[in-house]
Length: 92
Image 1 (cartoon, one colour):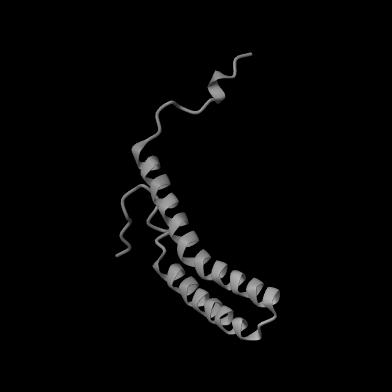
Image 2 (image 1 turned 45 degrees about the horizontal axis):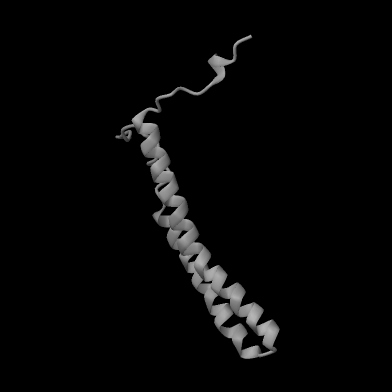
């Protein structure tokens, strides 16, 4: 029994490739912008626990507040509906 009909096509449509590029760029943008303040907060909390210095928790809290603002900005600026590969539909 041949399974050749189950293998993906050798040629991917260009609109699908463009869609994948846009999705990859969007994922990188989210990881960079949302992940950095979270990583900073995690490192600061680890330093605070490791050293016993309580004042380091303050900048960690600021990093979390910044991360919440970044999350709001990312969700408002994310174009998930535009990644269809086809022309935009007009709703007049």
